[in-house]
Image (tube, rainbow, N blue to C red; front, side):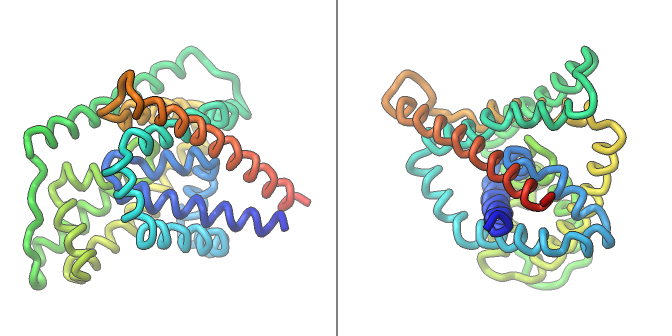
Length: 288
C-alpha cells in the first residue's frame, strides 16, 4: 500500500510539473522542490545510465507530466482566467509550505553560513528582475507573434532546437519558467500553435532540444548539488522565495477576492505539508 502511495505521489508531481511548464510565469522546477523530489529527479535524468536505473520512477513521473499537459492545462488556464487571484494564491501557499522542507534538505549535512545570504539574495533578484521584464513585455505588447513554419527549414530547425534547449534548462531550475524563456527567445507562440496543429516541423526539433536540455541541465545541477549542496540550496531557496513575487496576483488587495485567495493559500500550504508527509511515508516503506 505504501509503495502504491509513492507511485501516486510521482504521478501527482508529474501532473503539476506538466501543467506548470505550459503556464508562463509558473516554474515547474519550483513545483519539484515543493514536492520534495527535485534532487531525485535531477539525479534520475543526469545521464543514460541514470535513466535506465530509474526507469520505473521516470515512467510514473512522465505519465503524470503527460496527463498534466494534455488533460489539465486547459482546466488550469480556465482557473487562471476566471479565478486568477485564488489560483495564484493557492500556488503561493504551495511554495510557502515548502520553505521549511527546503531549509532542512539544504542543511541536512552542514549548518547555514553567513555567506549563504549572497546567493539567496542574488537568486531572488534574478526571478524578480525577470518577472518585471515579463510584465514590461506584456504591457508593451513586445511578445513576438507566431512564425509560419510550413516545411523544413535548416535555419528554423536549428533555431527551435537551440531555443528549446535553453528553455528546457530553465524548466528544471526552480523559480524560472521554461515558457517565459521561450517568450524571451521569441518562439513561444510558434511552439504553442504547432502543438495545437500537430506541426511536426516544429514539434520534432523542439522535442529534441527539450530532451537534450533536460538531460544535460540535470547532469550539471546534480553535480553541483553533490559538490556544493549548501550553496546550491541557498540559490534554490532564493529562487523559490522570489517566485512568490513572480506569481503574486495582479488583483491582490483588500477585497473579497483576496479574502477567498487567503483560504486557497491555506489549502496550498496544507497540500505542500501533506505531500511532504506522503514522501516521508514512501521513503520509509522503501527502506523497509
